[in-house]
Image (tube, rainbow, N blue to C red):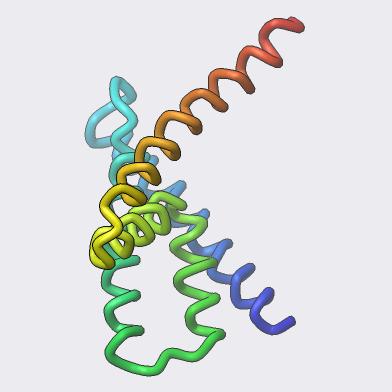
Length: 124
């Protein structure tokens, strides 16, 4: 049960951070391109890599993993998890699985966004 609280705390911080970064990027670059999303994906992916590497060379508590990796970075961007998992597949020599992970995530998620929009918009 404690891990759920850590995930919730990290998630709240990550969601707020995502919002603030997005606002900052809009102020810098305007709304012509989703620079806010790109920024949080890049930042989150970098931080996931750092956190994963720290966990590999030292012992991190389950609570800290829940707070940072699942909560904070998960709310900041799920792209960081996707990127980390894809890199791990590559590092394990599972190139086909890594490529499938990229293709399936990108293509199916784009398709599902479209399907979700069409489901609603077709009824309006």
